[in-house]
Amino acid sequence: MGKPMLYFVWGGVFTDMKFRELKPGAEECYGPLHSDAEANRIWSEKTRANVDIAQHRLFVVTAARPHG
Image (cartoon, rainbow, N blue to C red):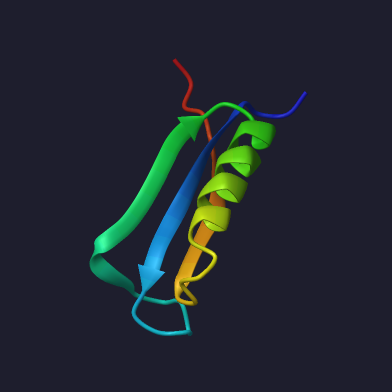
C-alpha cells in the first residue's frame, strides 16, 4: 500500500495564456481532500462553472500526508 495522500484543487484566473502567474484576488484553492475521486469531482465542477473564462485553469495537486 502506498503513502496516504492529500489532494488539493488549485488555480484561478491567470494573467495570460502561459498560466504562470495568477491575477491578484483570483486565486482558488479547495482542500485538503482525501481521495482522487473527490478532487476530480471538485475540479470538474469548478472548471465547468468557469468554462467561458479562457485564462481560468485549475489543477489537482497531490501531497503525501504527514506522519503523526
